[in-house]
Image 1 (cartoon, helix red, strand yellow):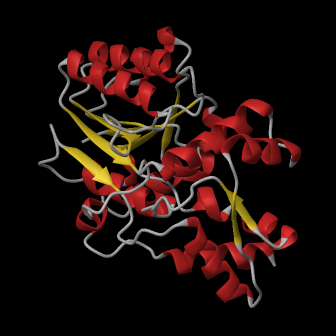
Image 2 (tube, rainbow, N blue to C red; image 1 turned 90 degrees about the vertical axis):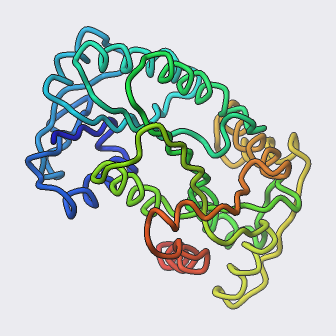
Length: 284
């Protein structure tokens, strides 16, 4: 069984390979990356694979049985890039595709969902057996703001009372490795999220508890939060996107209580307190 991982040098891909090597021989794993030399530390074979170069893709997938298609990081270009990969997978005779989609992509209020919906439709049209890993939010998406919260004395956002069922990136990577290394997943859609949901006020309270000082949550209107992020150095487009995702969270876009992630893992998902502790240690 040959398993290929796209975006293998990215944070998620790197973690998937590290976990997968504990389940299958390293010789069964292929890292698909833009620059193979940068994958030397992964301990597996690496092949050149650029989503934007269709002529390169099918040859790189030769001999691959199962492909983990990690969604492109280039928002706005994802659908076209994923189409290139799916077409190449069909040409190369890939037997199964596992795709990292978005939590409840079919009904999500997040603007990220549209390209995931398009990709899911393309997978269905391809006829290739596939599995959808609809990943929820990474807890690190929020704990990355811990240093700023400590510096400003407050945690800012626009999520209101929206409940966020996140899990750290490593949990999602482990779930992907489980699916890639076992059978019975073709045709299934997994809605993956953390076991315990929290509001951003809850997150601020946990930061406060561990930091030993008050870090309140300050909820801002979306436009005001976007302006604050832009003022902190984020590009205008990215600042607006982050603020809109918080608004999506306020509408329930980051909540799920199905516990499918912990069921795949065979253990509870990593709690918020653990990820906060890691962020505070890194910020020290």
